[in-house]
Length: 444
Ligand code: GLU
Image 1 (cartoon, helix red, strand yellow):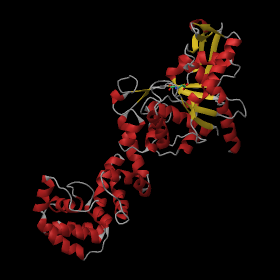
Image 2 (image 1 turned 30 degrees about the horizontal axis):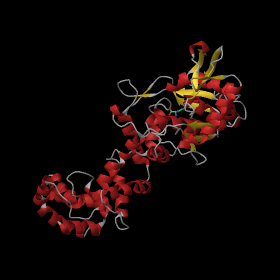
Image 3 (image 1 turned 135 degrees about the vertical axis):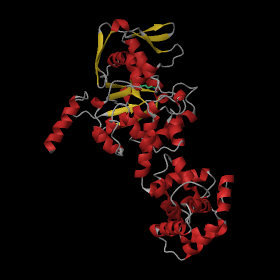
Image 4 (image 1 turned 180 degrees about the horizontal axis):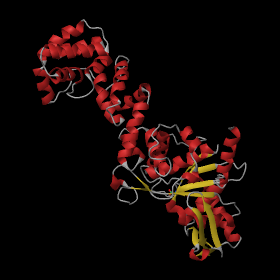
């Protein structure tokens, strides 16, 4: 078994362009542009999984050389999104490209000195050598460019600032990056960057270009398709583990793989050569169902930590007294909620104290059901507080009085939660406990 595993991993190494004993180092290199596009999150995730799989290191470099867009707020969008997703850099520190500008300039000078670059109107241009540039892309397969099709390109602008190609190559080499996993919109940049690596005397890293995420209409996923940023999903009450799971399903994990996975478990399974070449199509309904699944699988105590800030946003304070009610209540509610926002809304009745603000319909239901509530209260007063018994008491009352269940159930639910619809009554009563239930029925 052990030998088999070893053979498998050797086999994998051969398919990932790695030399024996090479220590894998990968990076995600986002530019601060605002909220983080989920495509960037997926690229980061695939880098992290690749690093986990090969026991390597996952780094984050923020490409912050565009002064106008690299505001502290935009940089925080990147850091906050990675924090929420569990995709912070392995060594805890973010590399800022702007701090390497001197190194970029030195590299440009080196290329000028060796005749591999030349001055053109004050800018510095890299001279494309003759021949072909080839790489074995770990996702796309063999790619070859005829250098004749590449133009000499600017590496240092006339104002002395380095361009993207120069910065990226020098930084990747300085950081010891062994594999570059990025969106396939970068394929055309790769031959230029390989040539730059070679001209500067570096061994070029291996490349893997992963397909972009498309919307249902076939165009690149954007705000037009609804939520497209990590922050949007966070605000809408998605669990980060669920978003990660869905992002893994875009181009890698099979669509029917629904079992929740930790990053580490996914890392064990991740094989870059299994990533599909074709565009990935975003399916919001699938993400929603994965989120619902993860909600059910998350222990209530962990959900509580995520719900408390949402209660606060509703102006509610979950106290020592109300916490046990929420914990019991959410066990039944996770089956009804698709996301944390819905769950917080439904569970708010356990944090709020009556009187509830009732809409007209709820008010009418409550008034019409007064008599039943008063009569049931007496029976509940003597009851042992057990879900099944409580259900039987209500069901027997309904039967004995020849009523329909909603005629009793709805006013009771309004009295206890302020809402007409929702969780089963016995579940609500058990979550509230006997004293609080009776007190809420008293207060109406
Ligand atoms: N900063 C570039 C971007 O945001 C990434 C460059 C790269 O991955 O090489 O697209």
